[in-house]
Image (cartoon, rainbow, N blue to C red; front, side):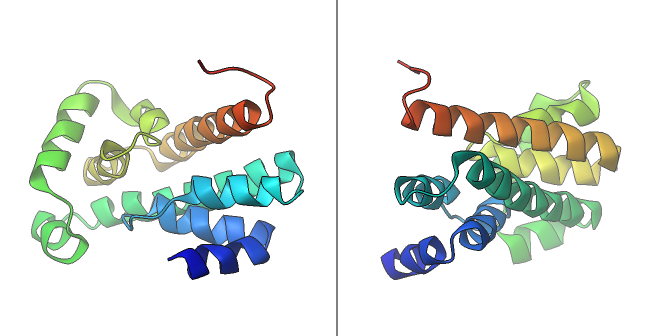
Length: 153
């Protein structure tokens, strides 16, 4: 895994985009490690944040699309999304709608939120906008804290 992260780091902005895309899907991957490594190597923090956000949002849309397929047994069988995760996401989303994609950056439940929004056939434009805003805010806070612009603790 370290060699793969090194490869993505060597690719710069494209590596960040790819790592964030993988992390945005249901695959377990850490786009934050690649983002912080690239910034540590001197890449522009704003372009790095935007590249990572774009990749992660596109990966998130794949989760929405998986949900939009609408076959729960496929989601369990092929994508290995746990029923417990989906149940928590349904409870979290219930009565709130498409804007709940804002919280898709959350670990564990974030992918399930997007899958459930796809299952519910939520407005894809609102999902896309709110998801991107949430993911951008997460990466911007992470980068700002790393650069010492803000203190999270």
